[in-house]
Length: 274
Image (cartoon, rainbow, N blue to C red; front, side, top):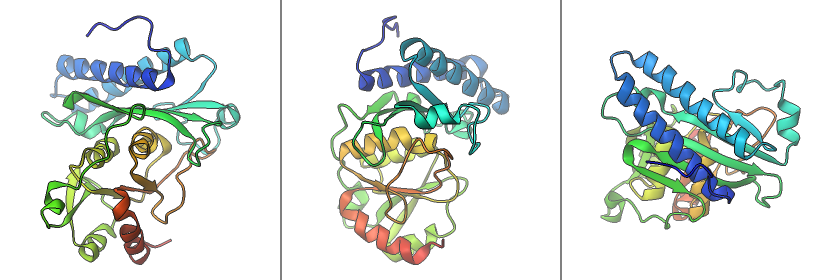
């Protein structure tokens, strides 16, 4: 695809444009490098997508701060540029390649690119002004403006069967099996956080619950889209998800249809520990 050298003006359209461009680069890199060296492919994809996002943000949004997973000190609670980011009015929170393992496996499409904008003046508790999630291998981009339609129940639960909970392929929370038993749910293993939240947005699954190890870039963009769609998104204790914090660790969340929120949060109180 040939892109206009001048991106869209609005932040929402710019986020979509940026996520789509990074996704196209990742697909091209996957095709060029191949799958014989998975570690090399993951490293190349991460770096190229990060460099693209960083360079385009520096060019087109030079006054804004950036938090990227691939920044060398991204996970540090105190960063050299921490004060400028935390006190900035606008911060782009990006994950250049969400789901590196899936990206390096032939045939897998459950990986994503996340581009979100946090704004001090957004008026929402989470502070997310807009977001876009590219699912390059699925040939789609989800954005918060305009948002996708509110999702239906998954086909399984709509037919009277169990609700479907997206779960990590590699490190599902220890409490998730007990939670699924209590609410009568079926666990559906999937790859990246972005792909799992996208599955809730599309109605493929009914909810995604995670605890135990994520950062702001893992959820900012997909949460922005999910909440714009009208879904419930919060910490697993029901607290507001907050972004652009000094420590970017944001280890747990739940995203689900609003009708499931109270039921799942009540069950979570019985199956999680502080």
